[in-house]
Image (cartoon, rainbow, N blue to C red; front, side, top):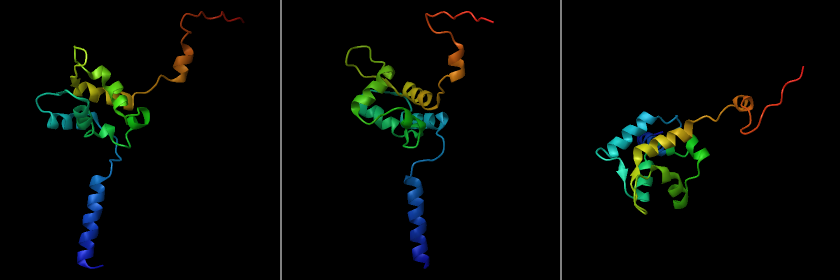
Length: 135
């Protein structure tokens, strides 16, 4: 290899590493820092496009994130439904999406654990009664 081809190879591999999705687990603190860098004074946006743009910067929404396996967010309708409880707009049709709430929701969904099957089995059925044990 010549020095020129080695430099080109190094430059190409560095570019590939920078543009490939992270394979590490995303962290809330890192994404919160990104949010505060991009929205230093106000973490409320007023459109679906602004919310999607802000969220696209977060690692929790990268293609390898656990959230992508749990929630489908490809269409505007899916995003509207996902953002509905982060909208602080009081009037009908008003959009005030709280990005801090959205970030918390993303991490809550990405890393929450369902109740264990054993714990579910120990609970009595709702509205039902347990049969007495006979010995």
